Length: 264
Image (cartoon, one colour):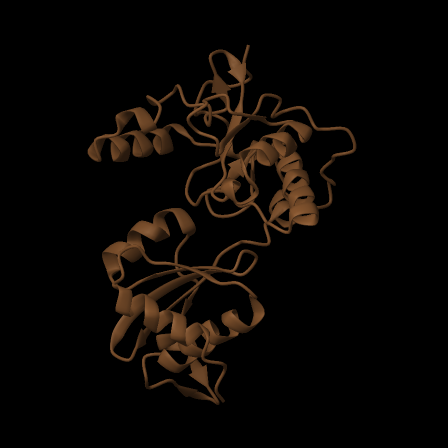
């Protein structure tokens, strides 16, 4: 018998590792242990697919199902209130996580690491990225949440995205920076920014409003935006640039900015 109905886990019983990555503390402890083990032994940092791809509430399940069906692939998303992401699956407690970069270490190793840390991989054999914690309310041995620490402070991921907006050389530019992973998401339209922002969080820094040396910027924040991209390139040894809506020329331009070096 599950503790809560599917998609109705109280939010105050969950921790948030990154925007929309909610899960019980016990699952978070297992996840952190899994990530650290793979990072230490394989040199790869696993990360959760952006969006509601850990705990998925009812609204998130409806959103996922509608999107999948609109693209003609209804079978890729569960009927709302039946998802293994919803805290319950077929009468059992469950907490599923979708992992974006599982393939970097190969399926056999990936499955072995998951089982070692208390997750079941391959429950749906067509979804190797989908792993399930069947004991999301049972803290693993040695794992605990100090009462003096907020859950967000305790579990906040290295890959918590940074984000910024500026008008760069006349082009509106939104960018999300994942410093822990070296992943960059960039778009040039408000529509695309709203869509990415719905699962990665709203923009934190609007460089158009920046003050430099006591005076407002006059270039739309473009130079500050470029410098931050360059700093990202310096501090992240390998940068992955994502921008599905961008042209090849746009992507090449962003890559050049990342590799340009910081200016004064």
